Image 1 (cartoon, rainbow, N blue to C red):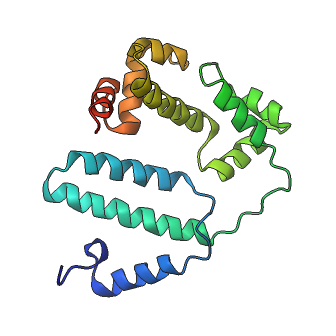
Image 2 (image 1 turned 90 degrees about the vertical axis):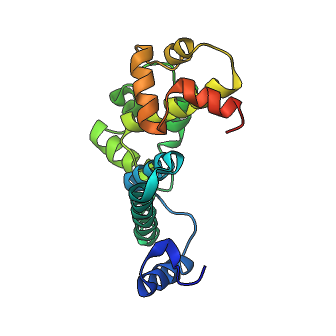
Amino acid sequence: MRGRTFLNLPRKQAAALTRALRGLPSRHFAGEWRLQRHLDAVTALYRRREGALAALQLGHHLTAFLLACLEAAHRRVDRPAVNPLRPVLAHIERHLGDPLPVPDLAERAGLSVSRFQALFRVATGLPPGEYVLRRRIERAGELLVCTDRSITAIAFSLGFASSQYFATAFRRYTGRSPREHRREKSAGG
């Protein structure tokens, strides 16, 4: 469209952001918690599609997401030759329904709790507890679509103490209830 710019930014800002994104030194980089927060907001706002203010918020979060990507792509993180977190991440995936206390995960990595938490945050962009909760929510989303198990059974199988807490956490991360997720995905949405 004539007169429109990237993310409706002023022309100079849109051009500068576009140049910076095209000039990224790498397409793969360690992210951080801000990326996920903005992406979650973009997803929730896009689903709502409620007028001019929501569109303004959507543009804000998209711009903030892209700026955070640029910062993360230019930040150098020295990675150890052997990643002590790889077996921990695999353990988390295999045991999402079990309690996963941080001290146990740190011990599995052969690190102190504080060192483990710092390395984990650098590697994943999230603290360990938040990472586990997000993985449980993601797995729940898959199970809601590909099985006919009850929402309560899925919640308990993934270590949630109650179906109410599960529903609250699921809505916080996805913008909809487990029932809405199942219905939309089953209907092809």
